[in-house]
Image 1: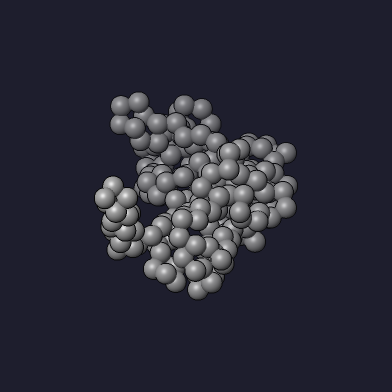
Image 2: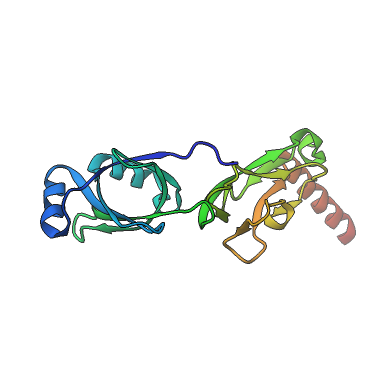
Length: 208
């Protein structure tokens, strides 16, 4: 199951409309709206600096948050849009959608690699090259996995691990249809040089 879902702190906003939004911005807040979940929309405002930090952290639109608003029950939300100033590119409004436990959502889930000691390729000095340390998956909001597991047992130099090699929980699937690469085991540079030297010697002998 999912680890701790990050909190997103917000305040209820008394008014709606352009005037209330301008007032929120003057106070260093970014106005927003929370909708969905079968209940009325809730006007909110988020401290500007907090929101900018979240945006800089990346993947704000694909992170599940626990929205905390004083006087309201905590609710899981995902951002469905951030409006920005066309000149300064700073956030001016956010749209958040409430999620039921059965709602499906796209989230980035970390990949955990296990059984390194059982991989012959790594024992020979091969290097695990991770192409995707996390994968965007379609998951159910109430059952989000902490991670997905890539088993390195029996893997040799030159082996490639695809998403199809990783067991996914029931009801979870990648957002990308093709069988993309997660990682591969590459030869160490010394071994590559030795192999190239052997190949060159063999070619020279064949020509001789």
